[in-house]
Image 1 (cartoon, helix red, strand yellow):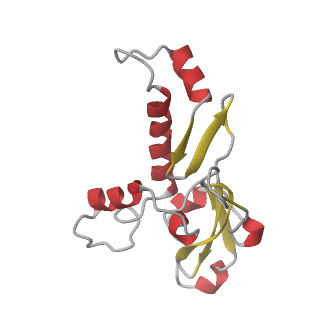
Image 2 (cartoon, rainbow, N blue to C red):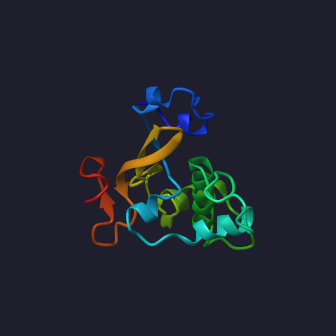
Length: 162
């Protein structure tokens, strides 16, 4: 078991893939999470493909058609600031007011529902991924992708279903 840093590491050597079938790690996002959980894909998925692989020469490749967890988290971090800064005028964002607005914000991110509760993220899902035979595979999730919809919260023990 490892943390999400393994997601960024070069893949394990494929010379002896049998040795790596038990490697599990957590991540804050997985590019196929919405489809696997049978939820509507966010626009980001197609927008990413259009931006980085419009001719679809790199089908399924990270960095072209698949965003990794760091890209997805960075996107949601920027969206957090955009949501929090909506009510400000003249492009002036006093830090204390922006922080207060951020700490009370809630929105649907590409990594799941994001809701802050006095500064800490309250509902951010965590994904469990298994590295096996040279590929990352989704194993489950713990958290909410849509806390307004029926069955939007999942847990790893039930294979990703409510």
